[in-house]
Length: 154
Image (cartoon, rainbow, N blue to C red; front, side, top):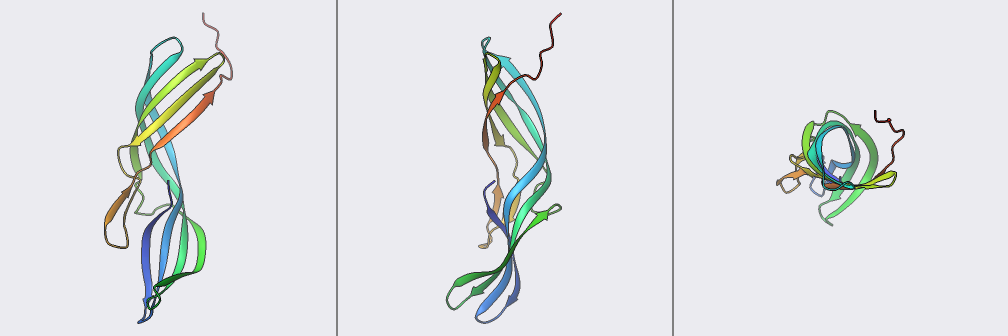
């Protein structure tokens, strides 16, 4: 997920300056369960599709204390630190992805591409202008798999 400023809380406001906290997502963590089906196009190539259920665990969030000079229209970050967000209402606790996969059996290894398209949002927030936004995370993974052991066929 890209860095997104998803919350800004004004602490103090004066004639020439404002003080506020700004929260920016750095990284999100999920527990994931995937259900899928694969179809063998040839003896070497599989195509697959499925759904992936994602359960929000926590996020690394950067919290900045920002001083904004209203006369010069300049922002200064006074203090910044990372924190863990677990029960933040901005994050969707569960979301679903549609997955597509191509797999090639190459000697001992499997080479593949797996992509995911979100069906629901990860993060719902209002930007400073007041517009409601949703963040969705598309992905494309390349993988190389090798079996740890072979079970003999009877």
